Length: 377
Image (cartoon, helix red, strand yellow):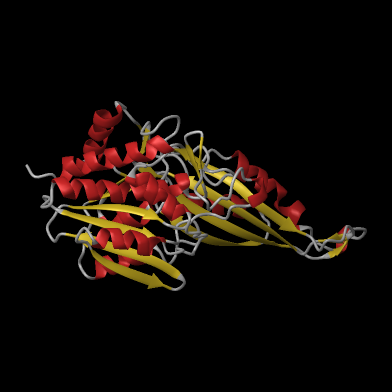
């Protein structure tokens, strides 16, 4: 059994449903400490984080990821215990196998092999781990980055192990992500009896034309490196539960995923303009989940593309699609940030799994990146 597979199984067998870490960071920290890393647990609120660094010189290459996983759902619907890390027909099953404990194991094993071959690298290696990526993401990577920035530590390059691959390992590199902007509207009406609408104000009726206008709007976004702006209504709620009552208010949740242009401020202004023209009386509460980011070039991207070609013979597609990631908290520091991990076909699903062979292959790719960026010249 390969070292990467063995470590991945050990991590899966530590249940770590967000925001719990389940002892995963302690296990990884022990492996890193044995390599000469200074290991620093950072706990904020109920969230465990870990910052580990080996070396004091630049450039600083950081492997980042999360030890928390999403809930398993109906455990009886799984083909096997979701935390047993069973291998069947060449697949490793378990919650977190692809997202992203397999990648974490590959990262650590890659560092072990690289440092055995190159004990004095030309720079520093770091690990930034959190148990708050799948949850609220308020006491995880963002807090670690605040701490590092406050004490003057910087990151030059960051490789995140999110499951970026699609049809085969390494076929897609995430070089950025769109931003996320959410709005909650509270539309005010006057509650009353459905038989006496003249004595009430139905907020659903009042807001319906505005809702249609929002959904039919072309929100733009013409950066060729990004998908266009996406606007989605995620929840609508009104009513008391009785069929003969006009509701007194309507709640509408919606979300934008957006590239650098038009940006959050412009989207807010257009949205509020449409709402104002609709005439319904309402309040809007905004939540900015993250700004868009992109790494359009640089040492890390070049090294990772070359490593994928060398190890797997793959020329990856460069993508900014998908949801948000913790890269949104790291990129603003000026670091080059890209995401490369296992295949994402089964993530968050029943019977999450990943091909056993690809964990070892990913470790080889990560090791090749280390040699290209930090190997002695």
